[in-house]
Image (cartoon, rainbow over all chains, first blue to last red; front, side, top):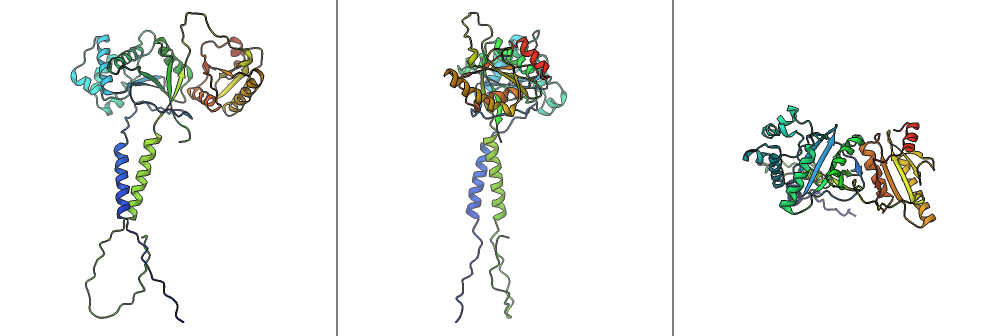
Length: 202
Length: 178
């Protein structure tokens, strides 16, 4: 009796289609991922179990760390309008090019006086120069309050929306530093704001 | 690589020497591996890096009218945030019941217990008063707000960083967390 022979089949599978699909997905994810603006201030945000996502429009973000405050308002049009308003208030005129450059800058922390030279630097220079000392926020020279107010006005004019204010604080930052900023917000009757946290367990 | 050699042994028959036909198939396994690894990476970074907003409402500072709501002592739990990641909590009025020092890992159970007790005793929901002191860190503040969410406290907590009472301060000093 002869044994029944099992036909030997090749175990290799045609990977071409799979490869096509995976690269298509890869391309999609690469393109849909938004390029992250480098943060001038490295903050480690605390985590929470909240589920509400931070909106992308009509929002300003105050980054607090190492005792400094950095400011960012979302949207190039809002940034531009805010800069114009701030220029008027502080009697500094900005050229068209400066406005254009400012509208793509993310978070910044320079006093109004050195803003002009800050705008003209490239991103490497900004980090190195040490010009980013945080936005002055004491009672004599409260530029942060002015930035907030002008940004709120700009959002109200351009988008007819209320601007949301969010705080992005370093987890190790002491509460009084946060309180100082919250007090500035409350002076402008911003009693509702959000804290930016990362999702727990990620 | 991922292919088993299934050709039956090397039974080479002599004869004419033929030019070898090279195989045009490329092994794509490694390429697919790489592609999926990258997909996973991009998927995770796009969804997970989205920051989460925690909405905070604070009482208006300069309200002129005096129509303030009194909090019932039987319903109120006050949590003081101190340094070294410690909290002090007490029920009711300050000074009447001795505060208790706890760490952040214990406070959740305490909140849950007190919530139940208040519900059983008065039939009303517990009201939380959070008092972050100067010794607390930002992380502590976020953590305690998170605990309130986890424990399902529906009423808005009162965040009070101005009126920290003298006997609260004295207790926290004594315990070394201020």
